[in-house]
Image 1 (cartoon, helix red, strand yellow):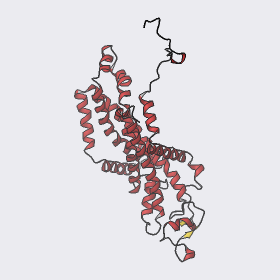
Image 2 (cartoon, helix red, strand yellow):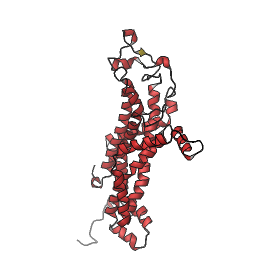
Image 3 (cartoon, one colour):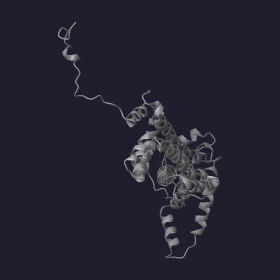
Image 4 (cartoon, helix red, strand yellow):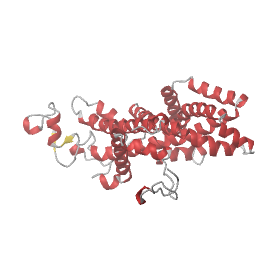
Length: 347
């Protein structure tokens, strides 16, 4: 059959050459897989709700977190006594004061437990976002310089990281917090130490927590970034950028950073629960926020002292801490699966 005798294709079969096939970027493909991960989406929803609660805490909390009503100390609504059988109301021959004034009950000083949990979300979420910011800024800078420059610079920076890694992280943070608390307690007015102490007091004791976590959070990030940079710095597109005279800072910013961003995001998301646990533990042992600033760790510590008589005072803050930490864990696992290049194109 000659070309003139070939049947013409139908109108619907003619390809429109003006329309280019639409591909899907790595980030678009990752977002699609993330949306299909129900656990990650559930974690993201919990995180968003927690952020909104922290932002609108004054509107959500029915009472001020530091208002004390001594007549209502250790009072609970009736439904709490049904959860804990050992908490017997006074009208049933027990020792529990029953009132509907407080949604989750009150603590030993007559402060509304629900309001303190709501305001306590501000402390945990502040640490959850400040920790990664410091880690990314410092760790990314140190890791990229060490990995790209190499040689003596790499050896020097990594030895500094190794020395800091020699100290157990928890112990190092505890020593730092104890040093800060002791050094800035009695200071002369008008000095630099005085203004630092005042700033710490104004933030409820969060400043020194940020410093303690910031000084220890970047080391793991620096090692991760260095390893990622070493794996890509000899790639063909990096060599091509060098051959046309692109400067090292531009190469790191335009070519290396976008290609190592996935593992960085995953690592920091999975590290957020660790930062939250640092703050909770410091507050639990009395080195965290300053009273009466509410912190879930401090509330758990106070509730643990009366856990046999009033277990709700430790349980409810612990549940709030549990949900937020697991939400970040679920989201981190989902991001790890979504950004894994081996999963590209796989549902």
